[in-house]
Length: 464
Image (cartoon, rainbow, N blue to C red; front, side, top):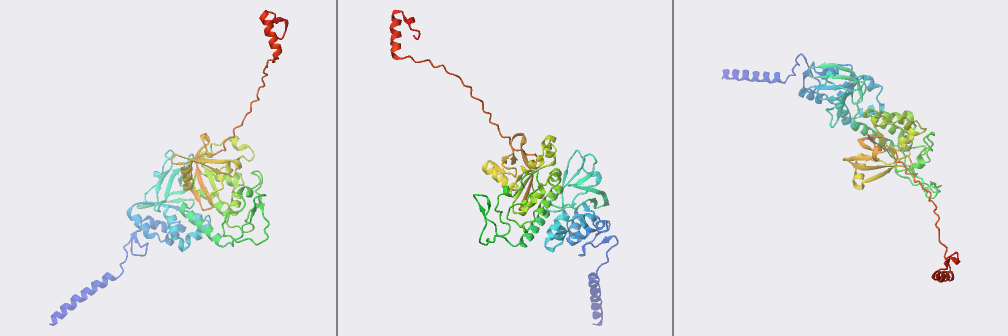
């Protein structure tokens, strides 16, 4: 009986010892680091460890705040990755403070994750594997949903580009499971930029007290002097004046104050929205000439911002750099020529690729008003897209919906549009031809001539 008790106690003690030992935390093996804090271990020579211990501290902090360590660990376990890491200055000083605040808000975690994952491609692409100038841009899918990166080289100096950002430190950190390239600035996906613009506009609208819209006298096209108090209307209601009345007197003059309904408090921050869409053009790539004309060569950016602040909506047909390079010196040398060309590319309506394509599909040919009054730009359906203009002066919708925030829409086209030349009607002078009308003889003279003719004496009267 005692032997049974001793044997059973020994077995029970051994079982309890093994159970306790298995429950104790295990010491990680040398060469492994716990990045996620959940027990998963990766090699210390991993590219993720190199990122967290590198000079790109700002990016590493964003990765931790976005809760992406486990996602990146799973990606490294499946394949090699390439990380495009912005320098710290691009995230500390160059980034818009409002945009950075937007990314760090808890409700915008998905936008932050999309932005960071769009800097990582699940393929190892070293500096020696970069596409050459002759091959053009090469597209790579990122870890972000529906986000792609284009790798290319600039002609002449051979600089490596990812989208439109320059690679400043190629092959900065290389590891067996991936590598890191240093880039000059942050790559902002279009979906994240639009989400930021939408939330900021909603915030600015909610902080404005609605004002009453003025009334227009249709006979004089002037504001009525209302005796009663104006009825309050929701913020963002369309302006009462037509856009022609709100525009500056002419492209050669400085923008004049609009006689519109805005007053001291605007419903929209037009200057900020125009600044956003110009930055989007620059980040998108291929539309630098258009942005330069809007900002440096003309005052159109200021005028567009004022119009949007007054409540108007605009659609910009933006020619790409290849189309702008075809403009001749004669076309730009005349006073006010750049403004007139740009005015013809701005439609005072809010149109997207879908709305324009549906219109041309349904109605065949559609004419849109432009800011170059009274000229209109014609659009029709061609080759499954929207074609503007006709003949040699036509352009196709090339990059749809580059920027859409509900007030400004930017559509990229592959040509510069010009108004159709008016046909001059030449009136030919009518040549007057004199008709010789024979004189009519009286009846008596006619009878006398017949009688003289019967006897052969008609020569006696000269009129016979």
